[in-house]
Amino acid sequence: MEAQDSRSRRIWNWFEVRYRVGTVANAMVHVKIPRSARTFYFGGITMFFFMVQVITGVLLVIYYQPTPDAAYGSILFIMNEVSFGWLIRSVHSWSANLMILFCVLHLLRVFFQGAYKRPREVTWGVGFALLALTLLFGFTGYLLPWDQRAYWATTVGTEIAGALPIVGSALDLLLRGGSDITARTLSRFFGVHVLVLPLSVLLFLVLHLTMVHQQGLADPKRENVNDETLPPGDFNPGSPESKRQLLPFFPNYILDEIIAWYIMLAALIVLASLFPAGLEEAANPLSTPAHTKPEWYFLFLYQGLKVIPRIVGVTLPIVAAVVLLFLPFLDRNPYIAARRRPIAIGLGVISLVGIISFTIWGRFS
Picture 1 (spheres, rainbow, N blue to C red):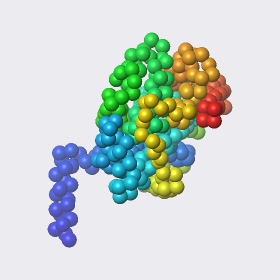
Picture 2 (picture 1 turned 90 degrees about the vertical axis):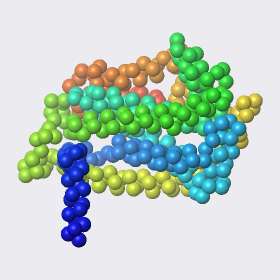
Picture 3 (picture 1 turned 45 degrees about the vertical axis):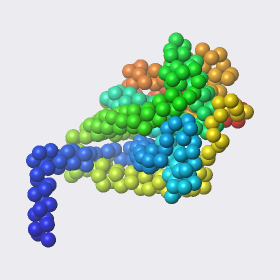
Picture 4 (picture 1 turned 135 degrees about the horizontal axis):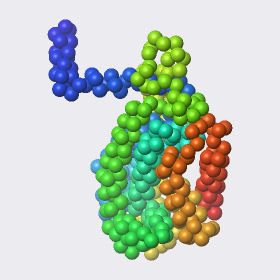
């Protein structure tokens, strides 16, 4: 037993001398968070669903064939012939939708709690980029089953992109690879979905987590940007003030995150089992379904283009996205408490109600 411990210690020391493994581990583990920041775990849950996407996506790619002639048949094979293939595909589909949902919830939580303010301006920008990449994940993955719903929903989605002023036609051509959705479109979407987007999300995720680690979690009980409870480096385990205000990231926060992950995993399995991912008839460019709509996260754009002038319906979301991206620099109000930010909170609530209303309207119209 002692010989085994000695061998393990030598291996550890070998890595420690060369790569400072212990130093890096201590820096990651010995992080302190405000007690008031333990309420929401939307960011960690979003990361969990991304990991589920990667694992199930790899399993699906083993059998999937990205050509119009074989794509639909390969999905049928996965669902009917591969052991638990239907469950893997359903988990992948549900986790994609839940990843988008919790990414949006995370952004809303950060906005309404004022956690985007100084010194976290760039962290907000990186997080916003992650949301955009997550939406692209959903958009590019939707076409891959190559059934009627996927084909025509992607047709609508690319038409929305084509409605953009100035760059719309070029963007539509770039997405489709031609005037219509063909094999070129499928191969482009597949390549972006399984290679470009995962690597991009991983890069931005590492950057985002590094920034959060360096700056610590924002305390929602702060009154203004100059009212940090304690800098991360000033934590003293023996200090009564620290014990009252801050908690160690490990094991307190990480255990809460793991519990949240287990709950999400259970919910994911239940949803995938009770409501498995469906598959319609194979894509037929000559047969247009009666009611073609994009996925729920683009329904507000779809409905907006139906009821308001196209130039307004396309330009308004772009302007809103740019404003959100640069919000930390545009919002000069130093206060963080919601009651001291009536304009920002009011505009946020109005925008949220509008998006939800247009989404519901688009769903039932």
